[in-house]
Amino acid sequence: MSASGSGRGRKRKNVAGLRFDPGWEHGIEVDAASKKVKCKYCNITCSGGIYRLKHHLACTHQNVEPCPQVPEDVREKFISLLRTQTLESQNKKKRMLDIGDDDSDEEVELLHAGGHRNKQKHYGRMDKFVVNKSRHQNKKTINQLFKKEERHDVCQTIARFFYTSAILFNCVNNPIFPLMVKKIGDYGKGLVPPSYREIRVSFLKREVQETLQLLDEFKEQWKKTGCTIMSDGWSDRKRRSICNFLVNSPNGTIFLSSLDTSDISKTGEKVFEMLDEIVEKVGVEHVVQVVIDNASNYKLAGEMLIDKRKSLFWTLCAAHCIDLMLEDFEKQIQLHRVTIKKGKRIVAYIYSRTNLIHWMKEFTKGIELIRPAVTRFATSYLTLRRLHEQKGALFSLFTSSK
Image 1 (tube, rainbow, N blue to C red):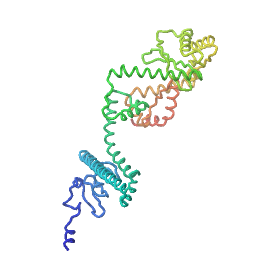
Image 2: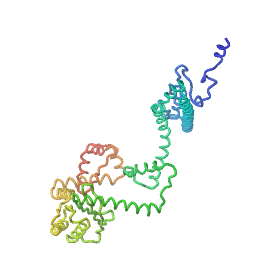
Image 3: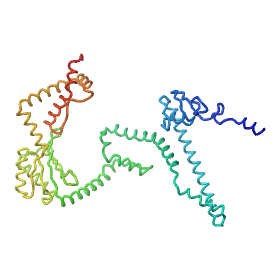
Image 4: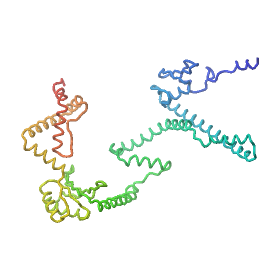
């Protein structure tokens, strides 16, 4: 009778009046039997009791929808609370496992004494050699939840470095970028970043040495299969003339050297001297062909080169040939010349007016009319194609009330 009376007097752990969990300050119990709790901020009802509600408020996506209206301080509070509870639970399990290992060691000692009962316990210790997958999976999931917030902080700092240094966003696509981040993570805490002098002197010298070693590997390939020398002349925004020389082989294409030709008259003889010097630098026995532009001075230089180097082939640049073909189309075909001229007038008219550019993008869904290309004449034809594709949008623009 007294036992039953004491049983009736014992109250349930989470009944009203005995709820010490801080989660109850932010939720209302809807159904005690099914453990449904309603969030005070978004009125979403969570199944699974107060534990599920705390994950709802912390926005961990742990088997529950995150609260869209939870205040930031409340969310951070429950993230910290769940992290603390998780660590305490892990430490408790670790202590229990340590105690179990000590008992097992005693059982091994008793086994050597010949106890039959302890012998059964010893053979039961085989579970130590079996990995508990569910335990490790849960630990990984919890770590991912809390690492997510830490990752946001780290990535925000990395992004801020890009913003404050005016670094192009395309640098993220550089394959060295994820490798750099991985190396920093592998090093761990306490990494001292490189100084200005180290970046400018020490590590630059090491990088040059590694690049030269990589070049030696390419040179070995040149000896086996031969290579192709490619000449690429262009002008920068300051109208300076620059000529780049590249070497192609089955291993890939590498940059060999660059020459400022702004003060050089690019006669056939002078171009021949430059090409012949590069061939000598690479090695005549390794060079199979030389690829150059199709201009008259380059043609003369190519003829002079194969007259001197009988083992070489002279090949015209396909991209330059196509550019010259498009140039001939525009200059010699009346229809092409008139059409390109009209297209240029339309583009110039739109892009010379700020409001018109804004209205145009509304009708073209943000698509530009100008299509930059590697060559000037290819740009003209690609822009004509874009005008044709956006013909309907441009009609709508010019007939609109705007």
